[in-house]
Length: 489
Ligand code: DUC
Ligand code: ZN
Ligand code: ZN
Image (tube, rainbow, N blue to C red; front, side, top):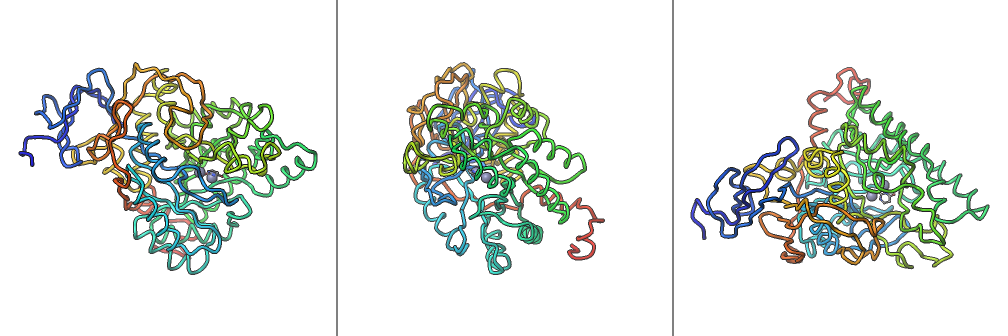
């Protein structure tokens, strides 16, 4: 037991940053919650001296795939244990992966299954988004509202992949339910037919190497679908989040829709900041390690994604960790005969997401530390109904913290990472700055390269109504045609 003035943990002398401020102070933690922020706090039962270190909110990775079957039936290499351990070692203290429905699956069973597996294995806190691929009447009218009430307040839909995609009519139905029930829709925006048409002709000509993945997934497929998704959301007068924005034109579509005052949010990922399509152009099938959808594009797109993250067009930076091994279980179902159409889409990034941006964004002077906190943590909490419990440093919030050493240099190798993938697209890079101590609800989860939290000790986060939805409800456009005639609030 402790007295009123005693903390379980005190972090002293750190340079603290939130999304809005940087200051020097101590943090006192009691019962997993930040109980005090100030100078000269009394001793904790454990005291950490953070002199010379930067104390930041633990990261929130709101887009990652864990123990999930892909549309092609390939199982991710990471389960809820390895994924959450890997996240924690990279400074992330909350993840929001997906509970994925495949066609024919009943939603309540899908959700129960993910709950069961995560509760058994996760070492840090987690929520879920739903992936919705089969919007039946039962799903739309009964199951989704119940799932949203149970704290899964966002869901992802696909405009591409034959086995996952919804048509525009179905997307309108989903946006309608989201509006009614207070949820946020996330969309994978790529034009399925453009990709299919190009891919078929490439394969007919024997052009099957990984680099052709980026040719088939033309930037136009992304920008067209992004524009269409925005139009559908506009028709319905609801917020919409475009995930994994990769291309310059897609960034422009997002920007111009925001300039019209539309509640369009967007996210991007390390692969669009640090890789280009040239990385796919390697001998044999080696380029498969860099194949994700949308693919990394050219230098101009890379610059546009950087600019979008800096100027606020893109609010969130997530990993889109989609872990597939470089063998028959993942990337190479047909060995070295695997074509770009056969390989699982996705790259790993849970552990390196924040160190990459800290090194190449913050320590190069390109991005302020406050913006780093916003795009890696605070904006995720706000967008997905976790704020202020998660994503900031303030009295009363969960003590989820990462203590960064800005002077530590790390040479990246796959073997130092804690995922089950076996490679990293960022092999051999040297990064500056590292989250040496990571704290989850007041528990020292990672310190001096060791894990100190138990399998199954992470907790499910029942999320509230996403902020963009709340804001739209307050400020929604009263003249919207549908709002006036069909869906008065
Ligand atoms: N979309 C994702 O979000 N992740 C992996 C593959 C995909 O298409
Ligand atoms: Zn996607
Ligand atoms: Zn994804």
